Image (cartoon, rainbow, N blue to C red):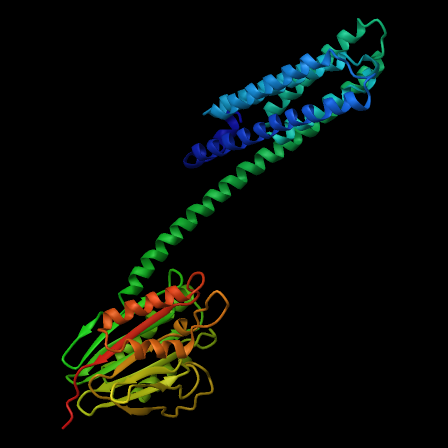
Amino acid sequence: MNIYEITTVPGPYRNMFISEQIKWVKRSVSIQCLLIIAVYIIFTPLNFVLDPDEFRIAEIPWGLLLIAGTLLVFYFNRITKTLFTTKASAFLFIILLLIVVTKTSLLYKEYGPFIFSIYVLTLFMVSLVIPWSPSEALVIAALHFIAYDIFYIFMTHAVVLTLNIKQFMDGLMLLFFSTIICIVVRSKETRRNIEKFILQKEVESQNEQMKSELKLALRIQKTLNPVPLYSRYVDVYAHFLPASFLGGDYAQFVFLNRNQLLFIISDVTGHGVASALLVNRFHAEFQILSQNATDPGLLMNHLNAFIKRDFAGTYMYLSSFCGILDFSSGILRYSNYGHPSQFLYCSAEEKVIELESHTSFLGLPFHDGHLYQSEQTIQAGDRLLLFTDGVIEIRDLFGQEYGYERLKGFLKQNHAMNVKEFDQELLEHLRAYKSGPFMDDIFLVDFKIKEIEKS
């Protein structure tokens, strides 16, 4: 690679490009060295066995020189550090190869008219495999012309002349056309390699910038996640685990007054940036509506109208479970729009109640404004577990889903734990069960009811 071609690579990438070129040249030269040795070791004895009368004993020292020189070039190529010395080792290899080819060809004078084909083959082999620049390929072609000329000069002094001037000129012509092909190919390859390298580095740079921006976006999105709550009536702990940088799961809880806790958990269809942006808008709308919330069913009606109005035509919908824990009456009022059945552990009966879905996703156009809401009694010692479908849809090595029953069993077995330990233990349980990475976002919100102010 000459100075002009290297300077066409933008400065920030130039050293990286040179490093890539060094690796490529080293690899190509090493492969050719090993190939030359293997071919000679295999075919020389084979030629001796199949046609001993044609074999020239004088070829053996030159073959040994080729093997020794190739091993030396191979070693030198391995320890070189710069592009100049790496390509210098490749030039040494080519010079050595041409010397041996020329000397060996002179041992087989009777094949003089056909020897040019060996030079053409060698030219193609060393020019097209190693990533030379066009100017370097021209120098290599010149070395082949010199070697072929030397071969002809020695042939003219042979006792029996088997190569006349016309045959020699024909060989030169074929070498000339081979040189044109090699230079054109190397020119296109050099330009393509530089363009490909620059494009690759620009894409990598853009990807790094995008990753940095996504990490920042995730950090911002995490500010939406609710912080743990420890109060007289209830302890609450939430954990969000996105499958990628940005997730489409959302949860929030807030006291409406001293003894009523409003909560919601939602899952946007799809993943990525679009889902995360919808989560942000959904959060803002929920914050506004929660200020005057009285019933979860009515609040969900307003959220449904909001999604239908502002996100019409985006084909983005949400499953959502919203409820109010009333610690004065001991009642849980809830509304479920297409969300998986959530779990309420009743400590008195030691059983898990499934709070099933009332209707389909938020945002679907056929909702008629009907108020969907149910009630369930609660008491101290009960536990409410909210989760998104990423929990129950985790699969093991055999493709078996984690499912509702395993989650129920875990809740029954560990209901006495504090909320933080429960969530951490459940996540470890899920990690042990799954095969491969988490394929969907996971959001857990765990409520441990401590006191009810029933009159």
